[in-house]
Image (cartoon, rainbow, N blue to C red; front, side):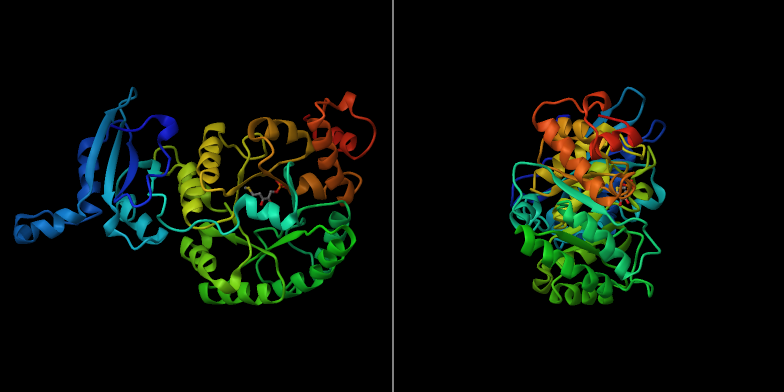
Length: 404
Ligand SMILES: CSCCC(=O)C(=O)COP(=O)(O)O
């Protein structure tokens, strides 16, 4: 039987010897046949009589169709269990088994994936570890994104960071669009920003994390990460879906890269955006990220600037929180969205704004202060409506972006 909706993405007990996947086949597809194709074709690969003398060995690798449910619209949802023994513990092997070659021909969508709790990696820091590093407890963490994304040199990054740091920002990240360009080399960006972070620590006793964007081929990216960390970098950003889960796994396993890793969702729409094909956002940005060792995962907030469903957001957050990974609702976040986000999430969240801080009418410092002001008012149960907010950074933000 397929589990109830709120159980669908829960981890299976540690040591469990099966991996369970829920697939939906659209109306018109022969769901039973497709499920059987997946269970055999993505495992033993052949069940021909010619191999009958190997039946015992092959059977131990064979997937099993555990349930088939016809849906109201004529589609079918099948749950298939795959032997864990077919895998080596990596996300690459897992994805190749559950959807690899089949994805090229079959029309199907993976709705949910249930992994044994001890499959893959756990975050080394997660939200509790980030809080400990920053010594910030009992309130949401406030994160900014360097904007403009391109065109800033290292000194330009430092100039922006200085304003944000002074206003009390917790975390900043590079834009994911920015690789190791000659106009702003990654090491120079870090070297230019490091003294500002140090000065903030000296002044306030509070750390500030800068998630530096990694790029390059797998080998040079890992070397870049090691070099950055050796020079004091305190967080990293990885476009996990464009560079690959294997790159994230290698970084998480690397003792020379012992800093929190922020996972960016760029490219997720290419895997998850089609309604009847690909994988659900909750699987990619929730389950897979949480089992590949990410410490914090960014995704579009459903009240932000990108079309995103509340249900997808809920599925992502549930999967991340089950493994203590920090949820980072993003894209179009500004102080006017704070009440909605905290209403949905409570305080165990990272609020991440790019233009919602950098394009504040009075500057970057006021952009950060507007978030803190919104948080203070929300905490006191005070209205965040424009008419109720006195003149100041939050008022100006609400004037520009609305919300509240
Ligand atoms: C798609 S979630 C990642 C958000 C992000 O990286 C970004 O640059 C959002 O910028 P914004 O100005 O919308 O806060």
